[in-house]
Image (cartoon, rainbow, N blue to C red):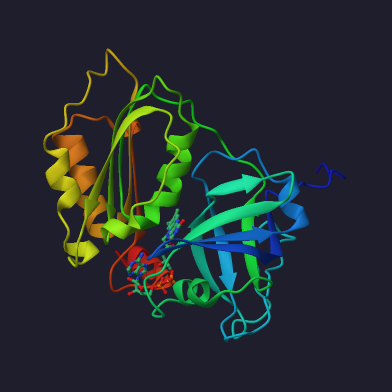
Length: 274
Ligand SMILES: Cc1cc2nc3c(=O)[nH]c(=O)nc-3n(C[C@H](O)[C@H](O)[C@H](O)COP(=O)(O)OP(=O)(O)OC[C@H]3O[C@@H](n4cnc5c(N)ncnc54)[C@H](O)[C@@H]3O)c2cc1C
């Protein structure tokens, strides 16, 4: 047996980040900037990449981080284990070590939304983030479809695309006031869809809009559909994109970001038992 003395570089870092700045981006979206010296060593990251937040299980409780020495997150005590939630890197400034996250404020029924709703400058939040990641070659044409939870990722990807990139983005939000500025320099048309009180899981705004879409031939352009949000929309859109828009499997990224009536851990549990 060959024993290597090489010390394996960790693939992820966990840290106790501090709230540096807070911006009420829209009535249901709050941008929170988190700072930590270790964030200066992260990246480059693909736009729209996700990471984990660790929220203390008791209000005002101490941030507890996992032991990552084996390469996997190990929690010393199940009783003090924080809530673990998934969020998107809206922006990472590697010079200052400041990471911006945009939290959808959906009420106090979820620990992450509740934490973001009452966060103040100087508060702590545990985070776990990959040191780097694969960066996809951009496509010529895109279909984006997402609700508020996907807005940070779609905005980050859009802002990274060149002026020659074409396509369409269907972005669904609760009210007109929830429309946010996106520094979109590409030729992708953004369509805002307003739910106006319809529950996200019952909304068919995105599906109805996509029915008018003309998708370029695969022989003329490289194409990519990026879909994320509530489970029902993602499931319906994944099927529609494959069966009616003629997009191939490798041209399709469709990810459930949340499911109505299920916390993140309950949704993972459901997936495991399906
Ligand atoms: C890869 C990835 C990236 C993500 N990026 C972001 C991001 O940048 N910003 C962001 O806000 N979210 C993002 N999400 C979604 C976020 O992780 C979920 O919304 C998560 O459930 C929020 O945790 P919570 O503690 O607030 O609520 P949970 O404790 O998980 O859920 C409590 C209740 O709230 C409901 N709920 C959860 N989210 C919403 C919502 N958006 N609207 C209405 N009800 C909801 C649940 O169905 C449940 O009934 C991302 C998810 C993934 C998988």
